[in-house]
Length: 255
Ligand code: HEM
Image (cartoon, rainbow, N blue to C red):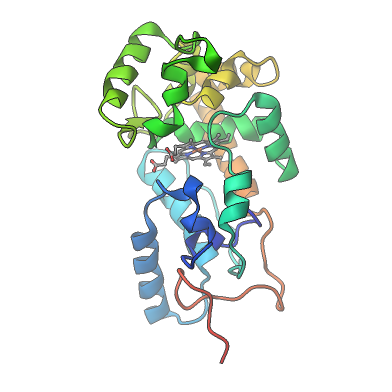
């Protein structure tokens, strides 16, 4: 994804994005391989892994109760995937809002896209690794991050005390439902990642958080629109660009 929407994250050779430290908690690779195998049986050499991944993200959203959107197809799969680039460029949850805005802008996404797409954290989980710095000695203060609700902080401390390999829900109230609880939680100082919580307090992003918290239909329709934008970044579609992989985890061999 670093180069664009080209399924480079699925490649699993030594030194690929998927092997990067920042990718270690990614999951779902096997289901993508299974979908690809079924599609190849019915319609060989036609559907790219990038298209499968984009459709799967849409379908998973729908299953969780989120909106449907038409996915434009025709992406090719990339041949380049770098762990070093992933470690350098993937945001990890401790950035400031200026950096987040910059990262999104570099990919043609605006501040509304940033706030709306962060709403994907209505689903899923994070390792304690990504939040431990908020729980103890935040910025060298020897105290926890003051923007964390006290009860929530205590529950996180308890869960993460066991091991840093424990996972916690990104949406503390409805982690399996695609809804606006992610945004209402931010209003109650219950954002899990510091990047989530900062979206609420920053003057550039806070007004969007308030609107999205109270208007589920605005969130659904804008999430769909921003996901289409995300899925169109850096698409390889011209005849001499990329390839349609036979197997999503490796580039095609030259014969
Ligand atoms: C704004 C910048 C973003 C930051 C800083 C960020 C950060 C993170 C972090 C730290 C995790 C936990 C992963 C771990 O512990 O290894 C996570 C999980 C997740 N993120 Fe983001 N993310 C961002 C944007 C997005 C976007 C744009 C989407 C999708 C549209 C997204 C969807 C998810 C999902 C679904 C999970 C849960 C994964 C799972 O349960 O396995 N994130 N994110």
